[in-house]
Amino acid sequence: MSRKEFDSLGRMELPDDVYYGVQTQRALINFPVSGIREPPELVRAYVMIKKAAALVNMRLGDLDEMRGGAIVFAADAVLDGKYLDQFVVDVHQAGAGTSFNMNVNEVLANIALERLGHRKGDYDFLHPNDHVNMAQSTNDTFPTATHLAVVDRSDLLTTVLTELAEAFESKAREFGNTYKSGRTHLMDALPITLGEEFHAYASAVRRAELRIHERRDDLLELAIGGTAVGTGANARPHYRDSVIELLSEMTGLKLMPAKDSFEVTQSRSQIVAYSSALKGLAVELIRICNDLRLLNSGPTTGLSEIVLPAVQPGSSIMPGKVNPVMAECLDMICFQIIGNDTAVMLAGQAGQLELNVMEPLMTYNVLSSISMLNNFVPVFVSRCVKGIVANEDRCRHYLDRNPILATLLDHKIGYMEAAKLAEESMRTGEPIPKLAVSKGLISEEEARIIFDISKMSVVNDH
Image 1: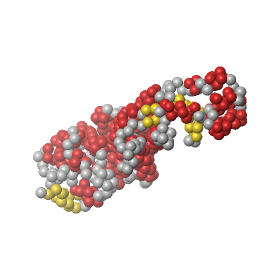
Image 2: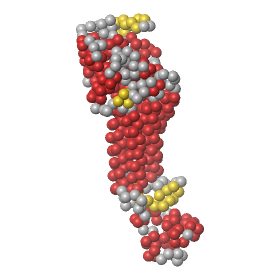
Image 3: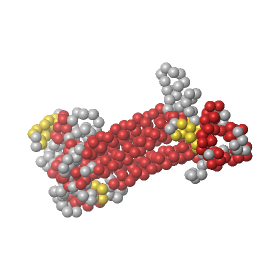
Image 4: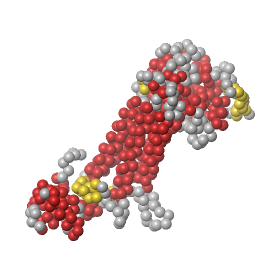
């Protein structure tokens, strides 16, 4: 069975069982790109906008109660998880997101039509543009849906990153008395504790999360009500504020209208800035994961100062080999996030005059980045960070032979003499404290005081 539908370009035939319509069908033909559909969180955000708009348009007397009520019914059905297979437009689509906006309009229109006893496609009675899209444009609805979806997923990301920071802090406490050599330029440096190393990881995650949260708050400002190019055309006075009030009730968020409705259609700087904050997090996570891989390296030819949990065999040919696969996976995710941010940055600068038409690409990449983090970071915490074990013997072995301990004698014998001592220690393998005492530079009692590593860490009180 099939049905015929008409739009401004003419007639098309569709399967009768689908709820999308002619413009969606055109998008399926025109944009068979990735096979990836818009994510459920964007569908949900878009449908909430349609519901709020219908309720406000009924309140203002522009949409009759029968049609408006049916649109609200259709929106609620989708929000309850029904009809999600009908949102079929590829994430790479017509600029600005018109195809997806119409996909939403058509699905809600056809659900509403069935609710009212009409056949799908009977747009003379209830139209996707005239009724479902009343007082709206893709120009304002797509950015608004983007903000709502990103904020929703960002709030989960805050929880996820907090758990990661807490896991690192727990390890910092556990490793608080594990003394080891610090390293700069990958060369021996002054002693620290393994706990201090891990506490710094926690601090870096928390700082990155704070930047993300600040950029998330920028997204509470919505473009809705600006309609086409920010003019507010075809929307009544008070429509914008009423829709935002309803969306605030639906989401539990303190939403606000855009300070300049023209700016938020021309510029997508808010979503670009949010993406950049995700990139900043990715850079920190890559650095931390690379540290973990390096500290775990070995077990006989690397640093081997920590042991990462063994979660799966590491080689198809080398028996017994175990690799740091969880850190490797998070590295790859973060590389992809940086690539996503590059696409967002390029899309952000591609806006022209009154509209940035690259919104769908920005939305997809940002939501994809958040989704990967939300999916994997909890697994990384449970299957990697929580199971990390300190190799205290190896840490102490390196520390005892660290020639840079000569630095602690600078105040006693001067930089140049301390440098000579360090060179001799490296040449002979003799530990610095023993060498200094044997040369009569300090007494054994002074050595115990000067080289008491536990008294060194006075900067941070964890």
